[in-house]
Every structure is written in structure tokens, then in C-alpha cells.
Length: 80
Image (cartoon, rainbow, N blue to C red; front, side, top):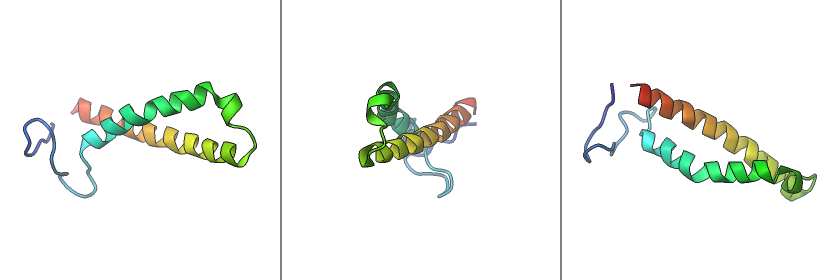
């Protein structure tokens, strides 16, 4: 069962602080997925043992975990 409040079809406010609106997850998937794909394709050149490479590796890992959680949230929402 989908819960929509206000603003037509889109959620304006979360139902509770622990249940954020799903459009945050959708936006995160749309915006950050290309960066994750780029890092994966360029991993040999970017993810070297330099300070930037270490930072990029941490960013890649954090982004991958975050996107996995967002995908789970969106699939749960789509299933009802």
C-alpha cells in the first residue's frame, strides 16, 4: 500500500522521521549511479595508492553501499 500525502502523486512530507520519502532514494540513484559506473570503468587509473586514490576508493565503497540501500528502498516501495 503506497502512502502519498499532499502534493498530488508525490510525497511532500515523510510519514515519520524514520521513514523518509522514496523520492530521495530515487534522486540518489539517478545522480550517483553515473559516478559509481565511471569509477568502476576507470578503477585501474583512479584507485591507485595515492591520497586521492584512497579517498576515491572510500567514496566508491560508500557510494556502492548507499546505492544498494536506496535500491532496496525503491524496490520495497514499488512492491507496495
